[in-house]
Image (cartoon, rainbow, N blue to C red; front, side, top):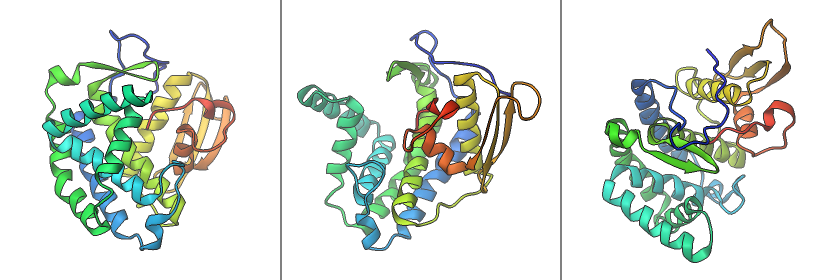
Length: 256
């Protein structure tokens, strides 16, 4: 069911996760496995390929991805990264998230690719466990992102899985290495993205996404009502993340 939600601009009404806790926990575990598996398939030359995140090649992007896993696997590491990125953001006049990702890339730059993958494998179970077991008082806290308020539950259950998922798509786009895709994992992530996108714009549409992660979604009356869109499921996600030129309802972005 699609519910119009718009943007959550009040700290007292932060965006909440739509996914059930058990589903979100399963997606987190599987996504971390997918990340390690994809990195293991890269050739030496592919680690140096440039990505849609223009300041990063694949190796730097993987350093950030590992840094997020490390942060979530250890509460002390989370505090350390937040304090260090806050100081850097003030010093350099940048956003805290940009300071944090830069610090993550720098921290892991000295690892070999084999060490990086091994560290993803080692830290991922703890990261998934901490996300799954985050206490209610923490999940109910609100945070601001780009003018919108999120619950920490939305961050833990949704964004922290969408982020590595989107970076897998980035790596695939940069290297040609295929993204593993199944209805049971990627399809669930895409469905959640579609539902949030539809709730944000609130208009009629008929959307068909191709590939194993795709499907068909309609809203606003009879089939064919509103804007009609047909595209690859992963290209849809790239569009909503601002990674490609878009028109119409695709201008409504969704956070990843």
